[in-house]
Length: 168
Image 1 (cartoon, rainbow, N blue to C red):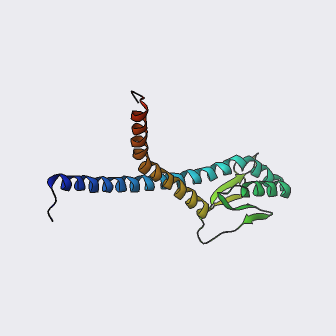
Image 2 (tube, rainbow, N blue to C red):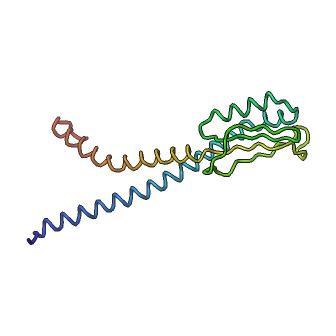
C-alpha cells in the first residue's frame, strides 16, 4: 500500500510535532524539578535565618524551654525532617534522619555579646522525600500545562468562532 505525498507529509509533521512536544516537556520537567528543589532548600535555609537570633539567645542563656519551642516550631514545617540544637551544655533534637536525608543546613551560634565566642550549632535537616514530592508535582503541572495549552487555544478559538465573537 502506497501512501500519497499529502498523507506522508501529514504523518511526518505529526511525528515531528509529537517528538518536539516530548522534548520540550522533558526539558521543562527537568528545569522545573531542579528549580523546585532549589527553592525548597532555600526555604529551609530561610527558616534557619528566621530563628537564628532566638536560637543564639537560647543557647547563650541555656534556656531549654526556648530551645524546645524553636525545635518544635521548625518541626511544624513539612520541609524539615530533623532539627538539632547543640550547645556546650546540652543537645536537643527532634525528628529522624532517614537514609534519603539531605545534608543538614548548619548555622553556628555565636554569643550576642562576642561574635567570636561560639556557643553551639543549629542543624536543620531538610526532608528529601517531601522536597522530591513537591518538585515532582510542580514539574508534572508544568508539563500538563504545556500539553494542554495548545488544545485549550484550539477549543476556545472554535468556541469563539461559533459564538460570533470577533477579534479573539
